[in-house]
Image 1 (cartoon, one colour):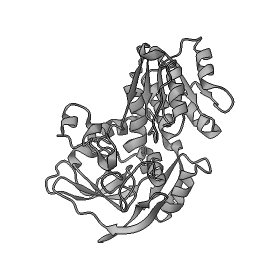
Image 2: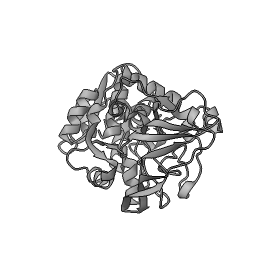
Image 3: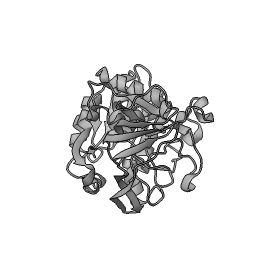
Image 4: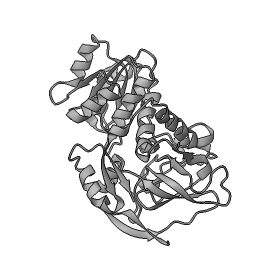
Length: 357
């Protein structure tokens, strides 16, 4: 087969199902036959023109697949193995990789953006919403999926689970901490699960959609605050007796949720930001304590690489987290445009979609 189907970005407002050549592989690459993938909120930013990519690019960065072909220098893997690879694909030998920040491997100025790190699939190279995917630096990025796990059970590992857990990890959550998580979309839900795994004693989640609130409780939230009925800042400060939280996680990428996450911090607390922002943020003087509050604001780009994926697969296999409830809809690749329409408009209670070529 020399041609394949792929979801192709044409221009803002238009991603279509088209046809492209099956990728060739270089010595360090692997070719995956995609068995399951999904759509991310970042893909919607691309569709809306809020995040710039080149016309003609195949979109998507969350692959599960079978190794179809290995580059001549790739060791330790076999054709036919079922694998995942992270949305972020560090080389393993760049400066960023060697100083322990593989997520920023390749950070530069693509399309005028200052820091896009190691995110290449569906950003600077063709992505996973296709029948086949070329994985660069395969030895640093492929992780074999245990036979007993389904594609849907591991589908969140390449991005959503890694990002949500990354927000909890970057926040430095300690045993006994109180944590607030603003928004319970897929990433916020995984951040909730991550906060619980790291030992948070009380988790406040902010979410107005009843179905997401119900899943939030399952993922570990103790209190879910409906922001359409109550002011989440007032509620969290009241429930903490005015102390505030040790760590807040912003998981939506909007000014109001970022500001709320800042306002609920105790002195010396940490705001862990996961949102992808499409406009400038403003930091209110009072919420920032005029710069004198000893607070930290830290951002996280989805940790990737082979070892990260191995750890996430171990968490799923060990039943420490169950993300199956996040996959709410199923489509074939032929239905990708309908999937984008549903996911982009957040209809029918959608959280994540499973797309199978």
